Image 1 (cartoon, each protein chain N blue to C red):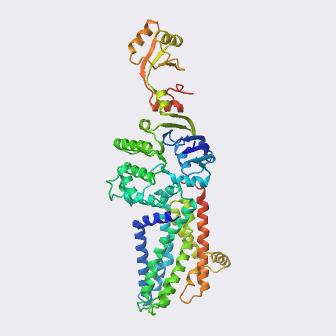
Image 2 (image 1 turned 45 degrees about the vertical axis):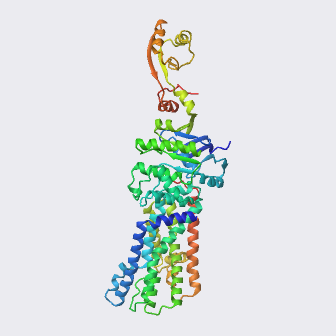
Image 3 (image 1 turned 30 degrees about the horizontal axis):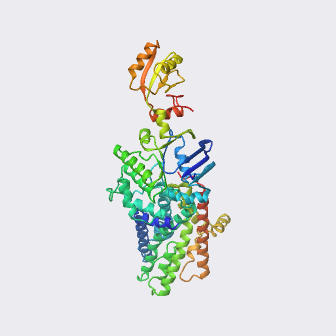
Length: 311
Length: 266
């Protein structure tokens, strides 16, 4: 399979600091990848390496199945990106800004400019100079810049940063539409995890320069699905009661001795009653559903649910 | 490379800073002519020559040229034009070359008012006083009031072209500086300092200064590269000035390419 972006053991050192440590990722066409990590985890470094703004210390990158410096330079014409903050020319309006980027990339179609401005909701920006734009407008312009020339891979670093709630929804819809209709592969980094959850199809979790987990939406939903959390002193008896009296094996015993029961969510009273009837002392009983945040924290070892989902 | 140049032209067309720089250069050229006339008819004493020297092309181009480098070359790192070009698949060497060409076009615009003033001086029969070694001022002092023939226009055009090449050579030092520092202040400061220092090192008479002068003679900073460009200059003088300017420019472009080839773009 020709991956849109493939990295193998990609490493980036800044002096003695290792920003990326043997990162190997494969981006398939037509998917939206969410790059999640704390500040300084290496998300932007990975994006900068992919777009040629930085050079790897070790490892390799290939774009659309081609590696090597010359080929990468060629293939980067198929990429659109906005990394860190949008680049704007302050004394020009939105359309003029787009024109400069369009001409720079050698894209002939002038009508693209109006289409893109409409697409990102800047068609009414008119003659207003970009230096007077709000952060959200600048962000939209940055996204429009990245979309010039109909790229096949879109790399966006915090694209919804500074957008109002409506803007966030609009950009989310736009990205999903671009992916579905134009089959564009998108790599987004964001700290807005609930938002990311509604946008992406696949996740790459990066921590201290290493990719610690890759999973798709289905896998994440499985990991985060709603359950009854039962805390009980006698874990082995609890397991037996769940299987014999409640006739379910859809549960998981956690290292802290509690159990996550994925069945009987509609029969919580029956569960409590059954546990009581079997002489179990229940210390805790709650309905939980892990959010992407909790899952992310558990994966990077941030404390909560530390061991829940490892492996 | 051409895409970089075209995109830069779009930006420059809209640039208020460029218009201001051009106006300052124009004002400098006109004032240079006026001051030379005031020196010529004795209204101004020669003790004002020091201050007036800032109006002449060597000082004005050195100052405005470095400012232009700081604003336009470094500005592209701030507005991310450089980032967009590289991430959009434009080769780094092509980018440097495109930027160099745009920069030289700006320098041409800075020199244009001095050319215009020189041509204008042909139509004004007046006495002018040379108060600083400047090609255009020399032409004004020697040729004003003379008949403007096709030959003289062509010769002035040739001299202007050669002056442009020499100034481009001098200011090409800002190219590697811009790709190293990416901030206007060091580019303007160091660029102007180099220009001024090279000028001063040629002024001394002792042995040490002679060594410096010998070294500088191989660069476009050598003042003779400019002062020998006159209406009666021999073709080999033109060749030497242009050759030094082109050679130094090529070296500086290569240096900028080398610096930027594997540089991190932040």
